[in-house]
Length: 282
Image 1 (cartoon, helix red, strand yellow):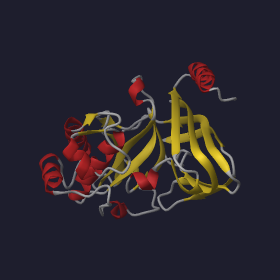
Image 2 (cartoon, rainbow, N blue to C red; image 1 turned 30 degrees about the vertical axis):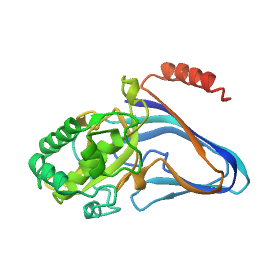
Image 3 (spheres, rainbow, N blue to C red; image 1 turned 60 degrees about the vertical axis):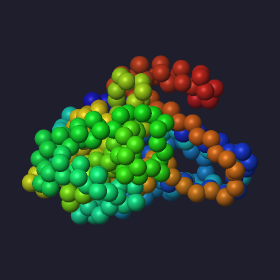
Image 4 (tube, helix red, strand yellow; image 1 turned 45 degrees about the vertical axis):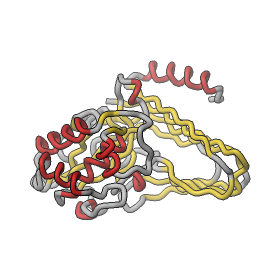
């Protein structure tokens, strides 16, 4: 399948920012199952490309001049394969690197008991899907109920959240069972307008298959050709599309909009309408 993607991120500040550095993980990963047909990053400042420790393509964006906004637009076409089987380990990091908990994926007694009830220490694909379904049944999809700083323990007690929260709770459950699991950021093609945005899901290590299985907890299914993978990491902080620091600027306002389509003509029409609504020149 060919996914046509456009993702605009626009930061505005109350006062001029003197200096800012942003890590952009906005380029699809070079891995089996997806191929970049075309991809473009439009952003101010200097860009330096590198691979991070997890094998993600990262651009270091540096702005040295005072600025009151940053507009980043990525767009292109990615060809994805319909393959729900386990992905082979790329070899950059051992799966064991994704067993230790992080501050966002720690467990308490309640979450550990839930993991033991619904999960397996040696899962097959069916067991992974059962655990993901249990997590999704436990956490209602509620936009705005949580923030990027909320932990798996907090979200589990709250009983609601978004895709990032579903992913963190799933990862926490796997790690409580000593099963490697990692966070995945990217895009998903869906007809549900409530989910048309940057998406998050999970890779779970299957020891018997010696590979990673992508599982979309929010949508209760294996990840496949509807998904475009940008980055992986131990949690959101390792894999988020944009993360940085700045000096000055005061309060920050963020506006982000994502378009994903499997039809080039439809995608061009949606892009024109998006530009007209936001009054942003092409």
